[in-house]
Structure formats: C-alpha cells, structure tokens
Length: 178
Length: 421
Image (cartoon, rainbow over all chains, first blue to last red; front, side):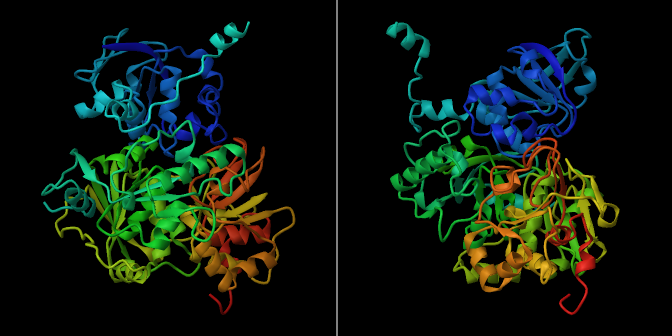
C-alpha cells in the first residue's frame, strides 16, 4: 500500500507542460524547477515528496522527452489518470514512476485528499470518503519495473550498461579543503 | 476474426501465431534509431554490448550543427558510441544527414513488415512504409540496442478507407487536420490507412499523415502496402521484405471511409490540433511574425515544391520571417536541382540546413514573447516553439507559404490560380 496527498490536473496534460523545451538539456536539479511552469506556476514549491497526481484524459500526450523522470525526481509517489498516453506510460515504466489508468478517478477526489493505492491488486481508495475504484490491469512485469526504479537498474543488475561515475560530494570536498 | 496489419507484424516479431488487444508482447526489433538527444548525459547510459550493430542507426537531427557546447559534447558521445560498436549507418552532419525519420524514409530503413523503434515521438512516420514504427523512451532505445528486443501492449485498430483524391492545393496536412477535427482523439488505438484512395497518395503525403498520427494520440500508425510502396523500396535497393495486408475480416474497433475530395484547407488554432481547426477562411487576416515549413511531417520534397509554387515571383511580406527547413540534406539537394530553393530565396525565404530546428523550439527560429507563427510542422502546443506566450497556428505548407507572402494568415487558393495548378 502506498498513499499520498492528491493534486488534481485536467485533461491533455502534455509532456511540454512537465518538461518544456528550454529545460530539456539542463541538469536534473534545474530541470525539475520547470515542471508545470506554464500551466501551474509555483507547484514545484507547493508539492511534497510522496504526493500523488490525479489527471484527466490523455495524460502525458506529446513527445518522448523523459517527463516522467522529472516527476519521479520531484518525488511524485503515484500518477493516476482517467487515461494515460501510451508513450508517456512507457516512460513511466522506463524511469520508475508508478502510473495507473483508473476510469472515474478524477471525480473521486478533491484536491488535498489522500489516495491509497495497492500495488498488489491496483485498487485506488479515497481515505476521506472511503470510495474505491479498480485501476485498469497492468502486467506484473511492468508494475515491478515501475516500483523498482525502471529500466536502468535492470540493465545494471545484468551488467549491460556501464555504471554511473561516482557523484562528487561537493560538501565533503569543501569540508576537506577548509 | 482476422488480424489488422499491426497485429500481424507484432505476431511475427514476437513469434506467436496471433496477438490480440490487451496482450503484452516482447518483440524482436529490426531497426533501432538513435539521435543526438539520446547522448546527453542526463539521458545516456553507455551500453557494454549491442545485439547487432547492423540493426542500429545513428542520425543527428535535433540540434545540428551544434548550437552550443552541450550539443557538441552529446554528438561526440554519439560518434564514439557508433565507432566503438562499428555502426555503419551513422548519419553525421554532412552529406547524408537529416531529420531521423526523414533519413529513415530517404534510405529505405523502415522495411515493410518489420519493427522499428526510435525515442522520438514522431517515429510513427515509418508507418507509411507498412513498418511497425513508433516512438518509445530513451531507456527503451538503450534496452533495444543491447538486447535486440522491446515490448508493446497490443491495441485495437481504427481503420480508415480512403476514396477519391485530394483537391489541388489541399495537402495531407489538411487531411490530418480534417481527421483530427472530425474524429478527435485516437488514444489507445492504432490507426490503419488503406482503400482505393491510396493510389492517389504519394509516399510524401503518406509520411505526413503517418507522422501526424502521433498528434491523433494514436499508438501506431500504419499504411497498407501497395505497388507505389514496393517501387519506392526497390528504388532504394530494398527488395527482400514481406509487407503485411490486413485480413479481410480484421477485428477493427471501427472502420471509417473518408472521401479525400471533401477535404478543404484547414488551420488549427494555437495550443492544440484535436478539435481545434477552422476552415482557412475563418482565420484569414490574422497577422503573423513568422512562417515555418519543416520537420519530419512537412520537410519533404513535395512540401518544399508546393511552397515554391506559391511564392514564385512574389516577395515575403515586410516584417515576416519565412523559414524553410528541408527534412534532409538529400531533399535539400533535390530541391536545389529542381529550382525550388532559388525560388524560395528569391522570394525572401531563409532556407536552413536539415534539422528539427524551429519545430521543437530548439534553435533556428525560436519564437519570442507574444509573437505569432503559422507553421507546417508537427505540433503547436503552448510554448512548443519558444516563449509560452507565442501563438502557433498549424497549417499546410501551401497555407504557410501563402501567409508568408500576405503577412497575415491567407488562403492558399488565392495564390494557386493559373496554369501551374
């Protein structure tokens, strides 16, 4: 079971809202600042890690840009929408963001309420009202990838991609030089 | 019930007798296409092996020639990757470069009956070649290059049967806008195009429509094979392929007949294309700052030809920037030999080297605050081509060229009178 505070968005939330063109090649820390800048400025400061997004129809239409990665890195715990664009859904699998299609979910929540999702049977429950809906089935392999961090951890475990270079910890470096 | 085209290709690629909507299939990938964006450090993870270098193609397109150091570095990473694994299909800046999907078309890489993936959303243009081609994610591409495989969720198919032919001056872009206006969203469905009207649609026109299938929110877009396709492939030395026709009793979600002759010139208003178009007559007179023709959807030779015919002997209106970006350097050379480039330059157009360029707001034609653009490219999302306050109208290359001359959105029909049309 996972749960999170709900933020509601409408229909046709496209990839460019989540990752606008000017942000595409910026370092990750800067890139996430652009999420929903055009349609909901300030949201990145209001949301907390673990919050959920509830979307309308055709969530994630648009390009193949890794918008799901930005949502994951902001700490979005789960995305539930009336329907999700096929390419965006792939990127949720790729980058490890739990994403579920659940017809009727948009009307089931008010913003700020808490959604509870079972990663076993893919039910969605409103903690305040008790309403429950069943998300559309997702093959187990894909659920496992979404909750397991996506494709890169899988390829790393099989020794098929080079490991990332170790991150330089700036705080330690500065401390050492003091 | 029989199978639609996509089901047949995916069944073969997954070594199953048949597949049905709802199935998750793991398929062998025949062609993996990488482009410059794959190689940025935020997206790239270095493969330690690849399944088959001859099934991998690298094409630089989104930001070329490199406009800044980060793009230059990504291209260095891409060159090193191609060299390390001995990838022969390497389309670097120069003679054989272009927009990935356009080069795939020029070279005959999208082989009928096969599976092709690329992590650009407009990969579906390869469906013009009866190829199961679609955009996937960056990690999908790395996975496919390494393992030779990817996965697809099988969807139902909406079938279009075309009859008749488009009126003079009406293009496949108008046909796309007509479908988006009349039938709306195609989410969670494949689209299949066929019927007797196909005989009147060129490969370029099919490519425009298949590319724009992404903007119908379709999963795959695919065309029936025919003799026009077979001879196109033969001209490119591709003779060993098995095109797939649908079964006569294919299990379609819906079957729709469109008389191409009823399609008129349409323009999509800013921010969306589905259900957001108007007959051109309702938007004429809208002042513009920029007119753009290019992209994988409209950087084809026919698109440049129609633009040249509209502007021949005329001049771009003062205060308007008219940018034309051929889809590939090969198309650029063909347009040059045909005289189209000279005609465009004489009219005051700026012709750029082949790149995705202004279409994605990357470079060479980025819009500023509150500017208005009419574009023949792939997408008119808010902020797509630059500043979020810019307005982006979407039309055919003919409409864009006519608007560049008029300085306001114009009906191309007014510029198409006379013996040439």
